[in-house]
Image (cartoon, rainbow over all chains, first blue to last red; front, side, top):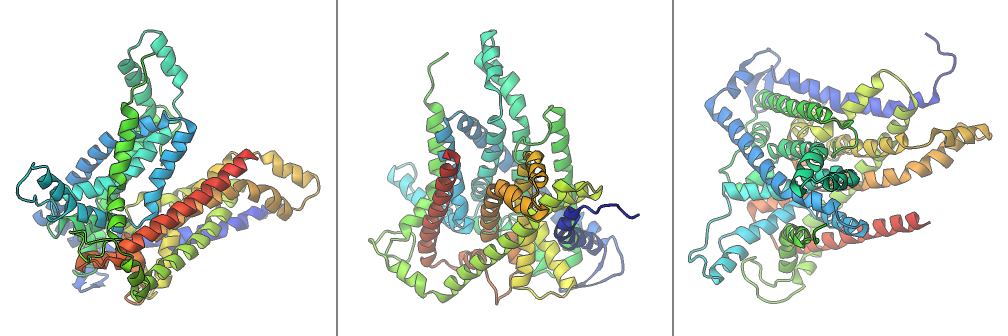
Length: 289
Length: 259
């Protein structure tokens, strides 16, 4: 079909389309294909298609890793939400200047290497570290506590790394709340709690969900936090993929794990968009995603 | 109304302080003359001097800046041109592509890293600057695309039409009308993109080579084998640089808002 007048802007789409095909569709399809290949060891594989890689995920060792990762992600997401909700909510109630200052304070740490910040946590938590020193100084404990290289240390690291995303997400939805609604409810005799529960909470729910997605999904992949703060004790799905890609050399297995992780993520994202539609917001502009 | 409670402000300040605690610690120890971060042995600038002698660390910092700047520029170009294209054309595939292009924001980084490593080795692209640049561009484009797209949606299409009616060429209308309106979005998208590239660990672990290391990878290796205090000094300098960049950005924005 020949168009009378070609839209000159269609040329502008070429780079984006090329990038999407070459850097997104291609690699993801390749991952799917690779997950059915036969492993030959140390990074080599043959294209004899098999379900072996998926069967292997069913092994108790690997199932356990999935289970533990999901548990850690769940726990850290709950903590992040509990700490982040009041923060984002109260931040949205500040004056314009106060909001700007808080936003700046949240942004600054992003410019400092996240690994160096983790190093700060190590100095804080290590057995001869600051926290133990303070606790001993206050005579709360006699022997230094072993805090580093433990499950709680990893949890602290995850909360620390992902809290800003939850805060920003809740803040951006709380900012849009129409406060005249709350005042109206209060005038009509609703208690503070009731006005919050019936008006503010539903209106900020999309922000909570997007924050949950933004903190739950990465937790399973942030292998370096588990690695550095957890020693070798805590193995996440992310650590498993990284290990299989580099040292283990079983690429098809690693691809299969990645496919499963993608499915888990997609289910979460789909339920997120479903829930935010149910809640009645147009879906756009509420929360960060 | 009830009296305003002080609790919210106290909470905001407390959490912010906790958030900054690790950074403060690292900054404090950058002035510690002891090599070990367990005891304080007096004030000293020696780790700053040592930092500039540490060629490998400086080199990986340079690599990170080079990678961050080039992937930001590349993704700013692709993202901005793409956003304009998406806004002005009505192909059926546009919706799918804008969804797919945003995927890197939603897929866990670990999957992106794994997938890029496998795919680039399929195409036999050797690991190093090129693989890092391609991967970082892929996850930087969505930030620019999102910011510029939302700006274009809010833009009055009549402005450009008016320019065209008054005899401006399409090119002229684009550069004189559309670009100035979307440029704040390009700048804020680029700042985000650079920050993400500069701080990326997960994807870079898969794609860097011994010949081309980024700063996060260097620090990661040190954290596993043993940290030298130059890292603390570097952290302090990065903090100062970030505050300066963000400060300039905010001042520039405020000046513009006032106009």
